Amino acid sequence: MNLQAQVRKIANHPHLSPAQKQMQIAQLADQSLDYPEISAKAQQALASGLICDLYEGHAPYKPRYVLPDYQKALRNGCEYLELEPPRDLDEAIQFLMIMYHHVPSVTGFPVYLGDIDQLLLPFITDEMSEDYLYKKLRLFWQYLDRTLPDAFMHANIGPVNNRVAQAILKVDRDLQQATPNLTFKYDYLNSSSDELLKEAITSIIQCNKPHVANHQLINKDFAEGYGVASCYNSLPLGGGAFSLVRLNLAESFKFALKEVPQEKDIEKHYIQHIIPQCAGLLFEILEARIKYLVEQSGFFENHFLVKEGFISADRFTAMFGVFGLAELVNSIMELKGQGGRYGRDEVANNLGKRIINAYAELIQNKQVCYCRNQQVLFHAQSGISSDINVTEGTRVTTGEEPETFTHILAVLPMHQYFPAGISDIFNIDETIERNPLALLEVCQGALRQGLRMFTANVANRDLVRITGYMVRRSDIEKYKKEGSRLNSTALGSEAIDNDKVINRSIKKI
Image 1 (cartoon, rainbow, N blue to C red):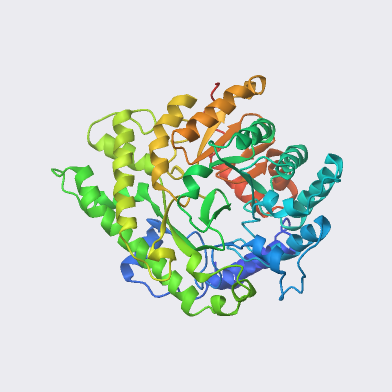
Image 2 (image 1 turned 90 degrees about the vertical axis):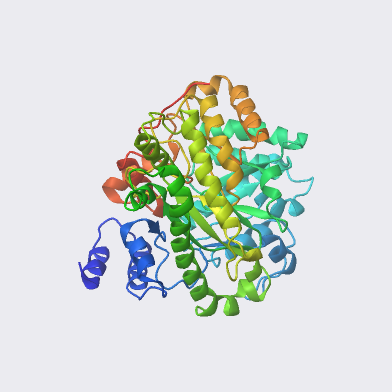
C-alpha cells in the first residue's frame, strides 16, 4: 500500500477521532523519510525483527522520554508559558495542567507528571479539609484523563506518607481511570513509607494500581534524582531518554543457529560471539538516532524546557532494551537436550542470568556520545501490542507463571541488572481482598530482597495491566464497536487479541 493509500485509510477510519487521525498521518510522514545513516547489516537487523526501534520515526526530532524538573518550574515560573510562580493550590494545579501540554515525548503526550504529592505539598494548608483536598485532586485527575488521553502518562508519589499522596490513592481507586499510570516510591527503611504502602495495597486490590518502586535501590542509580515514566521506566530527573531501541532475544537465537556448528557449545558460542554482534548492531542504530536528535533536530538549542533549565542535555541517556529472554533460554535448553523451562527450573533460570549478565557487562563498558556519563542504561522492555509468541522483557512466558513465591524468586535475580526499569507482573487471585496483609507482606519482602519494581494484577478487575500501562476491559469492548478517546485502548485491545493478558496464570497467596 503506497503512502497516499495509507493516509486515505486513516482519514476515512470511522472510529478514530480527528486528533488520532492527525497523529497517525504525521507518523506516516515521518516514516517516509530516509533513516539516519546506518550500515547494511544494521538495516537488515531492523528489517528482520532482530532489532526494533519501537516506531520512534526516521527523523528523531524530540527525545523519547522527557522528565522535566517541575519543582524548579513551580519555584521559578515559566517565561515561555507566561506563568508566574504559583502562590496557592489552585494556581499550582493550573500551572501543572498548562505545562503538561507542552512536554514532548514519543507518544505526543507527557510520559512523566512528576512527584505529584511533593509538588503540591507546599501549597497545602492546615485549614484545608480532607474533603476539600479530595475534590481538588479528583477534578485534577479527571482533567488529566480527559485531556491527555494516553495511559503512558505517569505520576509518582512518595516515599514519605502525606495528605496529598493519601488523597491521590483514594481518588485513583474511586475514579478507576486507566490514566494516569501511577508509581509509589516505597522506602522500606522509612516507617512513614510503610503507612503509605498500606493505602497503596488497598488501591492495588481495587484497581491494580500503583506500581511499587524500590526507592532504596533505584535512588542509588540516580544522584540527580529520578522519575518513573511511561510503563515503569526509571530515568534521570531533569533529563530523560533520547531513544529506546530493543533487541529481540528470541530472534537472536535464530541468528546464533545460522553461525554455530553443531558440535559447538551453543551457550558458549552465544555469549562469546552472538552477544557482541547483536549489541554492536543495536548500539549502531541507537547512536545514529541520538546523533540526529542532538546534532540535526535543533531540539536542545531551541526548546523552552532546555532554555529555562527544566531539562538539561547532560541528564539524558538512552535505553538498550531486551525482550524474549524466556524464548531464548528455552530454545538453548532444548538444543542442549535439557527439558527445564525458564521461570520453573533452576538450571534454566541460571542460564538466563548468565546471558543477561553478559549483556549488562558489555553495556556498562560501552561509551556512547552525548549520553549521561557516556553510558546507556539497560532496560527490560515490556513488549508492544503487536508482539506475537515472544515474552516481554525478562518475564516468564504468559501461562507458565509458577506460584507467586516461586515466581518472585525466579525473576528477582534479574532486577539487579536494569537501572532503566524492569517489571514482572504477579497475577493474584481476587480472594486476596480478604487478606490484604498477605499482599503487603509479599510486596515488602520482595522489595527488601532486591526486587526493583513490584507490580500486581488482581484478577477480575475492570482495570487490567497490559505490559506496564493500564486499560479498562469495558473500554476495550466499547473500542471494538465505536473507538476510544484513549489512544492506548487500541494497543491494549491488540495485546489482548494476541493472548498477552487472558492466558495469564492466576495464583492464590
